Length: 395
Image 1: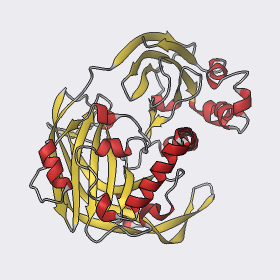
Image 2 (image 1 turned 90 degrees about the horizontal axis):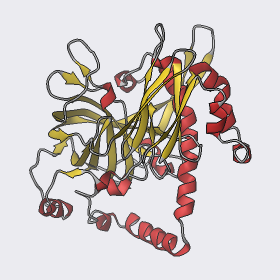
Image 3 (image 1 turned 60 degrees about the vertical axis):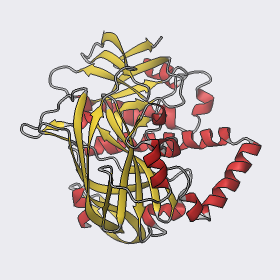
Image 4 (image 1 turned 180 degrees about the horizontal axis):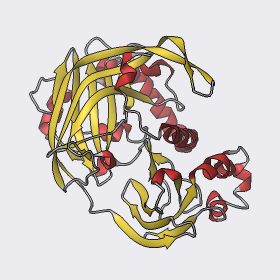
Protein backbone atom coordinates (compact mmCIF):
# COMPACT_ATOMS: atom_id res chain seq x y z
CA UNK A 1 0.00 0.00 0.00
CA UNK A 2 1.32 3.48 -0.82
CA UNK A 3 2.79 5.61 1.96
CA UNK A 4 0.34 8.44 1.38
CA UNK A 5 -2.52 6.18 2.43
CA UNK A 6 -0.97 5.84 5.87
CA UNK A 7 -1.61 9.55 6.44
CA UNK A 8 -5.37 9.19 6.15
CA UNK A 9 -7.14 8.90 9.54
CA UNK A 10 -9.29 5.75 9.73
CA UNK A 11 -12.38 5.99 11.97
CA UNK A 12 -13.29 3.08 14.23
CA UNK A 13 -16.66 2.69 12.49
CA UNK A 14 -15.15 2.73 8.98
CA UNK A 15 -17.63 0.24 7.52
CA UNK A 16 -20.60 2.31 8.65
CA UNK A 17 -19.10 5.58 7.43
CA UNK A 18 -18.36 4.10 3.99
CA UNK A 19 -21.81 2.55 3.67
CA UNK A 20 -23.58 5.74 4.66
CA UNK A 21 -21.48 7.80 2.26
CA UNK A 22 -21.89 5.59 -0.80
CA UNK A 23 -25.65 5.82 -0.99
CA UNK A 24 -25.50 9.58 -0.48
CA UNK A 25 -22.99 9.90 -3.34
CA UNK A 26 -25.41 8.34 -5.81
CA UNK A 27 -28.16 10.69 -4.69
CA UNK A 28 -25.95 13.76 -4.84
CA UNK A 29 -24.75 12.98 -8.35
CA UNK A 30 -28.32 12.69 -9.63
CA UNK A 31 -29.31 15.91 -7.87
CA UNK A 32 -26.42 17.81 -9.45
CA UNK A 33 -27.34 16.53 -12.90
CA UNK A 34 -31.00 17.53 -12.53
CA UNK A 35 -30.05 20.99 -11.30
CA UNK A 36 -27.66 21.63 -14.16
CA UNK A 37 -30.20 20.62 -16.76
CA UNK A 38 -32.81 22.84 -15.12
CA UNK A 39 -30.47 25.82 -15.25
CA UNK A 40 -29.61 25.34 -18.89
CA UNK A 41 -31.86 27.77 -20.72
CA UNK A 42 -30.99 27.94 -24.41
CA UNK A 43 -29.42 31.40 -24.56
CA UNK A 44 -27.85 31.23 -21.10
CA UNK A 45 -26.36 27.85 -21.86
CA UNK A 46 -24.96 29.06 -25.18
CA UNK A 47 -23.30 32.09 -23.59
CA UNK A 48 -21.92 29.96 -20.76
CA UNK A 49 -20.43 27.38 -23.13
CA UNK A 50 -18.83 30.01 -25.35
CA UNK A 51 -17.36 31.78 -22.31
CA UNK A 52 -16.07 28.54 -20.86
CA UNK A 53 -14.45 27.49 -24.10
CA UNK A 54 -12.91 30.90 -24.65
CA UNK A 55 -11.31 31.25 -21.23
CA UNK A 56 -10.58 27.53 -20.97
CA UNK A 57 -8.35 27.78 -24.05
CA UNK A 58 -6.84 31.11 -22.98
CA UNK A 59 -5.39 30.53 -19.50
CA UNK A 60 -3.64 33.89 -19.56
CA UNK A 61 -7.01 35.61 -19.81
CA UNK A 62 -8.61 33.21 -17.35
CA UNK A 63 -5.95 34.21 -14.82
CA UNK A 64 -7.19 37.80 -15.00
CA UNK A 65 -10.66 36.89 -13.85
CA UNK A 66 -11.35 38.22 -10.34
CA UNK A 67 -10.24 35.45 -8.00
CA UNK A 68 -9.13 36.78 -4.65
CA UNK A 69 -12.10 37.77 -2.52
CA UNK A 70 -14.48 35.94 -4.86
CA UNK A 71 -13.40 32.31 -4.62
CA UNK A 72 -16.48 31.01 -2.81
CA UNK A 73 -18.87 32.18 -5.51
CA UNK A 74 -16.88 30.39 -8.21
CA UNK A 75 -17.12 26.89 -6.73
CA UNK A 76 -19.79 26.89 -4.01
CA UNK A 77 -22.28 25.17 -6.33
CA UNK A 78 -19.92 22.33 -7.21
CA UNK A 79 -18.83 20.77 -3.93
CA UNK A 80 -20.42 18.11 -1.76
CA UNK A 81 -21.23 20.78 0.84
CA UNK A 82 -22.82 23.34 -1.51
CA UNK A 83 -24.11 26.64 -0.17
CA UNK A 84 -24.02 30.38 -0.74
CA UNK A 85 -21.04 30.95 1.54
CA UNK A 86 -20.09 34.01 -0.52
CA UNK A 87 -23.09 35.87 0.92
CA UNK A 88 -21.89 35.57 4.52
CA UNK A 89 -18.13 34.98 4.28
CA UNK A 90 -15.41 37.22 5.69
CA UNK A 91 -12.87 38.34 3.09
CA UNK A 92 -9.27 38.33 4.28
CA UNK A 93 -8.06 40.84 1.67
CA UNK A 94 -9.15 44.39 0.93
CA UNK A 95 -10.53 45.15 -2.54
CA UNK A 96 -7.33 46.99 -3.42
CA UNK A 97 -5.17 44.06 -2.32
CA UNK A 98 -7.36 41.62 -4.23
CA UNK A 99 -7.12 43.65 -7.45
CA UNK A 100 -3.33 43.81 -7.24
CA UNK A 101 -3.07 40.08 -6.64
CA UNK A 102 -5.38 39.29 -9.55
CA UNK A 103 -3.19 41.47 -11.77
CA UNK A 104 -0.19 39.34 -10.86
CA UNK A 105 1.49 41.68 -8.41
CA UNK A 106 3.49 40.00 -5.67
CA UNK A 107 2.26 40.70 -2.16
CA UNK A 108 3.32 39.61 1.29
CA UNK A 109 0.46 38.30 3.35
CA UNK A 110 0.00 35.69 6.08
CA UNK A 111 -2.78 34.30 3.90
CA UNK A 112 -0.44 33.62 0.97
CA UNK A 113 2.15 30.88 1.41
CA UNK A 114 4.59 29.63 -1.24
CA UNK A 115 6.67 26.47 -0.98
CA UNK A 116 8.20 24.09 -3.53
CA UNK A 117 6.80 26.06 -6.47
CA UNK A 118 3.22 25.94 -5.17
CA UNK A 119 1.37 28.96 -3.77
CA UNK A 120 -1.64 28.45 -1.50
CA UNK A 121 -3.92 31.43 -0.84
CA UNK A 122 -6.75 31.50 1.70
CA UNK A 123 -9.04 34.26 0.48
CA UNK A 124 -12.28 34.03 2.47
CA UNK A 125 -13.62 32.22 5.54
CA UNK A 126 -16.99 31.33 6.97
CA UNK A 127 -17.62 29.55 10.26
CA UNK A 128 -20.61 28.37 12.25
CA UNK A 129 -20.91 25.90 15.14
CA UNK A 130 -20.61 22.88 12.84
CA UNK A 131 -17.86 23.69 10.37
CA UNK A 132 -15.23 26.13 9.20
CA UNK A 133 -15.13 26.78 5.44
CA UNK A 134 -12.02 28.15 3.75
CA UNK A 135 -11.95 29.48 0.18
CA UNK A 136 -8.61 28.36 -1.23
CA UNK A 137 -6.63 29.07 -4.41
CA UNK A 138 -3.69 26.81 -5.30
CA UNK A 139 -1.24 27.90 -8.00
CA UNK A 140 1.28 25.36 -9.29
CA UNK A 141 4.27 26.83 -11.13
CA UNK A 142 5.08 23.67 -13.12
CA UNK A 143 1.42 22.91 -13.81
CA UNK A 144 -0.76 20.07 -12.60
CA UNK A 145 -0.57 16.80 -14.60
CA UNK A 146 -3.39 16.32 -17.10
CA UNK A 147 -4.65 13.24 -15.24
CA UNK A 148 -4.20 14.71 -11.74
CA UNK A 149 -7.06 13.25 -9.67
CA UNK A 150 -8.85 12.42 -12.92
CA UNK A 151 -9.30 16.04 -13.96
CA UNK A 152 -8.96 14.98 -17.59
CA UNK A 153 -12.21 13.01 -17.10
CA UNK A 154 -14.05 15.59 -14.99
CA UNK A 155 -17.78 15.82 -15.64
CA UNK A 156 -21.01 16.02 -13.66
CA UNK A 157 -20.28 12.59 -12.15
CA UNK A 158 -16.76 13.43 -11.02
CA UNK A 159 -15.88 16.20 -8.59
CA UNK A 160 -12.52 17.88 -8.89
CA UNK A 161 -10.39 17.95 -5.77
CA UNK A 162 -6.92 18.01 -4.25
CA UNK A 163 -5.94 15.79 -1.34
CA UNK A 164 -3.67 17.03 1.40
CA UNK A 165 -1.84 16.10 4.56
CA UNK A 166 -2.33 18.74 7.23
CA UNK A 167 -2.85 19.46 10.91
CA UNK A 168 -5.27 21.92 12.47
CA UNK A 169 -5.20 23.84 15.73
CA UNK A 170 -7.86 25.90 17.45
CA UNK A 171 -6.02 27.74 20.19
CA UNK A 172 -5.56 26.32 23.69
CA UNK A 173 -4.74 22.63 23.24
CA UNK A 174 -7.47 21.88 20.73
CA UNK A 175 -6.75 19.88 17.59
CA UNK A 176 -8.82 19.11 14.50
CA UNK A 177 -9.89 15.82 13.03
CA UNK A 178 -11.36 16.67 9.63
CA UNK A 179 -10.60 14.39 6.68
CA UNK A 180 -12.27 16.43 3.93
CA UNK A 181 -10.48 16.97 0.63
CA UNK A 182 -10.25 20.41 -0.92
CA UNK A 183 -13.07 20.30 -3.47
CA UNK A 184 -13.47 22.73 -6.35
CA UNK A 185 -12.34 23.26 -9.93
CA UNK A 186 -9.14 23.33 -11.93
CA UNK A 187 -9.40 26.69 -13.70
CA UNK A 188 -6.45 25.88 -15.95
CA UNK A 189 -3.30 23.75 -15.87
CA UNK A 190 -1.76 25.89 -13.14
CA UNK A 191 -4.72 27.01 -11.01
CA UNK A 192 -7.13 25.23 -8.69
CA UNK A 193 -9.89 27.00 -6.77
CA UNK A 194 -11.65 25.12 -4.01
CA UNK A 195 -13.29 24.99 -0.60
CA UNK A 196 -11.93 23.19 2.43
CA UNK A 197 -14.43 22.14 5.11
CA UNK A 198 -13.10 21.65 8.63
CA UNK A 199 -15.59 19.66 10.75
CA UNK A 200 -15.79 21.40 14.13
CA UNK A 201 -17.65 18.44 15.56
CA UNK A 202 -14.35 16.55 15.44
CA UNK A 203 -12.30 19.06 17.48
CA UNK A 204 -10.71 17.50 20.56
CA UNK A 205 -8.60 18.47 23.55
CA UNK A 206 -5.06 17.35 22.80
CA UNK A 207 -4.45 16.35 26.42
CA UNK A 208 -7.43 14.08 27.15
CA UNK A 209 -8.73 13.71 23.55
CA UNK A 210 -12.28 14.63 24.57
CA UNK A 211 -14.56 16.48 22.15
CA UNK A 212 -14.80 20.20 22.86
CA UNK A 213 -17.02 23.12 21.91
CA UNK A 214 -15.13 26.13 20.56
CA UNK A 215 -15.71 29.70 21.79
CA UNK A 216 -17.27 32.36 19.57
CA UNK A 217 -13.82 33.67 18.62
CA UNK A 218 -10.70 31.53 18.34
CA UNK A 219 -7.32 31.36 16.63
CA UNK A 220 -7.19 28.79 13.85
CA UNK A 221 -3.97 27.32 12.49
CA UNK A 222 -3.79 25.19 9.36
CA UNK A 223 -0.46 23.57 8.55
CA UNK A 224 -0.17 21.73 5.23
CA UNK A 225 2.87 19.60 4.44
CA UNK A 226 1.69 17.71 1.37
CA UNK A 227 -0.67 18.41 -1.54
CA UNK A 228 -1.21 15.38 -3.71
CA UNK A 229 -3.41 13.62 -6.20
CA UNK A 230 -3.75 10.30 -7.95
CA UNK A 231 -2.89 9.63 -11.57
CA UNK A 232 -4.20 7.09 -14.06
CA UNK A 233 -0.99 5.06 -13.65
CA UNK A 234 -1.00 2.36 -10.98
CA UNK A 235 -1.19 -1.30 -10.11
CA UNK A 236 -3.53 -3.85 -8.60
CA UNK A 237 -3.24 -5.06 -5.03
CA UNK A 238 -5.36 -7.49 -3.06
CA UNK A 239 -7.01 -7.09 0.31
CA UNK A 240 -8.05 -10.17 2.28
CA UNK A 241 -10.57 -10.04 5.12
CA UNK A 242 -10.46 -12.55 8.01
CA UNK A 243 -13.42 -14.45 6.56
CA UNK A 244 -11.43 -15.13 3.38
CA UNK A 245 -13.15 -12.53 1.21
CA UNK A 246 -10.77 -11.09 -1.36
CA UNK A 247 -10.95 -7.57 -2.77
CA UNK A 248 -8.94 -6.49 -5.80
CA UNK A 249 -8.15 -2.79 -5.56
CA UNK A 250 -6.40 -0.34 -7.84
CA UNK A 251 -3.49 1.49 -6.26
CA UNK A 252 -2.85 4.64 -8.26
CA UNK A 253 0.46 6.38 -8.42
CA UNK A 254 0.40 9.76 -6.71
CA UNK A 255 1.88 13.10 -7.62
CA UNK A 256 3.06 14.92 -4.46
CA UNK A 257 3.84 18.55 -3.82
CA UNK A 258 5.56 18.53 -0.45
CA UNK A 259 6.36 21.73 1.41
CA UNK A 260 5.27 23.96 4.26
CA UNK A 261 2.14 26.09 3.95
CA UNK A 262 1.26 27.41 7.40
CA UNK A 263 -1.71 29.68 8.11
CA UNK A 264 -3.00 31.40 11.21
CA UNK A 265 -6.16 33.49 11.42
CA UNK A 266 -8.75 34.77 13.85
CA UNK A 267 -12.12 33.10 13.34
CA UNK A 268 -15.54 34.37 14.42
CA UNK A 269 -18.37 31.87 14.56
CA UNK A 270 -21.66 32.99 13.03
CA UNK A 271 -24.56 31.62 15.05
CA UNK A 272 -26.90 34.53 14.40
CA UNK A 273 -28.97 32.62 11.85
CA UNK A 274 -29.10 29.30 13.69
CA UNK A 275 -32.52 28.01 14.71
CA UNK A 276 -32.96 25.36 17.39
CA UNK A 277 -36.29 23.61 17.88
CA UNK A 278 -36.96 21.60 21.03
CA UNK A 279 -38.53 18.24 20.18
CA UNK A 280 -38.26 15.88 23.14
CA UNK A 281 -39.63 12.79 21.40
CA UNK A 282 -38.59 9.36 22.68
CA UNK A 283 -39.48 6.05 21.06
CA UNK A 284 -40.36 2.76 22.72
CA UNK A 285 -36.77 1.54 22.25
CA UNK A 286 -35.42 4.43 24.32
CA UNK A 287 -33.77 6.44 21.56
CA UNK A 288 -34.98 10.01 21.32
CA UNK A 289 -34.82 13.23 19.30
CA UNK A 290 -33.95 16.07 21.67
CA UNK A 291 -33.51 19.06 19.35
CA UNK A 292 -33.36 19.87 15.65
CA UNK A 293 -30.91 22.58 14.57
CA UNK A 294 -30.88 24.46 11.27
CA UNK A 295 -28.25 26.90 9.96
CA UNK A 296 -28.26 28.67 6.58
CA UNK A 297 -26.42 25.65 5.14
CA UNK A 298 -27.30 22.50 7.07
CA UNK A 299 -29.75 20.79 9.38
CA UNK A 300 -29.13 18.14 12.02
CA UNK A 301 -30.55 16.73 15.23
CA UNK A 302 -29.27 15.96 18.70
CA UNK A 303 -30.21 12.48 19.86
CA UNK A 304 -30.39 10.73 23.20
CA UNK A 305 -29.55 7.03 23.14
CA UNK A 306 -30.32 4.35 25.73
CA UNK A 307 -27.62 2.92 27.98
CA UNK A 308 -25.43 0.39 26.23
CA UNK A 309 -25.89 1.98 22.79
CA UNK A 310 -24.05 4.67 20.82
CA UNK A 311 -25.13 7.02 18.04
CA UNK A 312 -23.46 4.72 15.49
CA UNK A 313 -26.12 2.08 16.25
CA UNK A 314 -28.68 4.34 14.59
CA UNK A 315 -29.21 6.13 11.30
CA UNK A 316 -30.41 9.72 11.48
CA UNK A 317 -32.39 10.59 8.34
CA UNK A 318 -33.77 14.05 7.56
CA UNK A 319 -36.18 14.71 4.68
CA UNK A 320 -37.20 18.03 3.16
CA UNK A 321 -40.68 19.52 2.97
CA UNK A 322 -41.44 17.33 -0.05
CA UNK A 323 -40.61 14.16 1.86
CA UNK A 324 -37.34 13.37 0.05
CA UNK A 325 -34.05 12.73 1.81
CA UNK A 326 -31.51 15.53 1.96
CA UNK A 327 -27.88 14.97 0.92
CA UNK A 328 -25.20 14.68 3.58
CA UNK A 329 -23.02 17.70 4.29
CA UNK A 330 -19.74 16.47 2.84
CA UNK A 331 -18.58 13.30 4.54
CA UNK A 332 -20.54 14.01 7.72
CA UNK A 333 -23.42 11.52 7.69
CA UNK A 334 -25.34 13.06 10.60
CA UNK A 335 -25.53 16.60 9.16
CA UNK A 336 -27.62 17.26 6.05
CA UNK A 337 -27.16 19.88 3.34
CA UNK A 338 -30.15 22.13 2.62
CA UNK A 339 -28.88 23.99 -0.46
CA UNK A 340 -31.69 24.69 -2.98
CA UNK A 341 -34.13 22.54 -1.01
CA UNK A 342 -37.36 23.51 0.75
CA UNK A 343 -36.69 23.00 4.45
CA UNK A 344 -39.34 25.26 5.98
CA UNK A 345 -40.58 21.93 7.30
CA UNK A 346 -38.40 18.86 7.79
CA UNK A 347 -39.12 15.27 8.74
CA UNK A 348 -36.64 13.69 11.14
CA UNK A 349 -36.27 9.94 11.63
CA UNK A 350 -34.07 7.71 13.73
CA UNK A 351 -33.83 4.16 12.39
CA UNK A 352 -31.99 1.05 13.46
CA UNK A 353 -28.73 1.20 11.54
CA UNK A 354 -28.78 -2.34 10.14
CA UNK A 355 -32.48 -2.29 9.31
CA UNK A 356 -32.05 0.97 7.45
CA UNK A 357 -29.18 -0.17 5.27
CA UNK A 358 -30.40 -3.72 4.74
CA UNK A 359 -34.05 -2.90 4.08
CA UNK A 360 -35.44 0.61 4.45
CA UNK A 361 -33.13 2.53 2.12
CA UNK A 362 -34.08 0.23 -0.77
CA UNK A 363 -37.45 1.98 -1.02
CA UNK A 364 -35.70 5.25 -1.92
CA UNK A 365 -32.79 4.03 -3.98
CA UNK A 366 -34.49 1.42 -6.12
CA UNK A 367 -35.03 2.65 -9.66
CA UNK A 368 -38.84 2.87 -9.39
CA UNK A 369 -38.96 5.53 -6.65
CA UNK A 370 -40.24 8.28 -8.97
CA UNK A 371 -43.39 6.23 -9.46
CA UNK A 372 -43.67 5.02 -5.87
CA UNK A 373 -43.42 8.50 -4.38
CA UNK A 374 -46.66 9.48 -6.12
CA UNK A 375 -48.38 7.20 -3.64
CA UNK A 376 -45.94 7.34 -0.72
CA UNK A 377 -42.89 9.56 -0.24
CA UNK A 378 -39.74 8.34 1.46
CA UNK A 379 -40.70 10.32 4.57
CA UNK A 380 -44.12 8.66 4.68
CA UNK A 381 -42.48 5.27 4.26
CA UNK A 382 -39.95 5.89 7.04
CA UNK A 383 -42.68 7.09 9.39
CA UNK A 384 -43.99 3.51 9.35
CA UNK A 385 -40.64 1.98 10.30
CA UNK A 386 -38.57 4.51 12.28
CA UNK A 387 -37.81 3.99 15.96
CA UNK A 388 -38.77 7.60 16.59
CA UNK A 389 -39.71 10.51 14.31
CA UNK A 390 -40.61 14.18 14.40
CA UNK A 391 -42.09 16.78 12.07
CA UNK A 392 -40.43 20.14 12.61
CA UNK A 393 -41.47 23.51 11.17
CA UNK A 394 -39.09 26.47 10.93
CA UNK A 395 -41.05 29.70 10.72
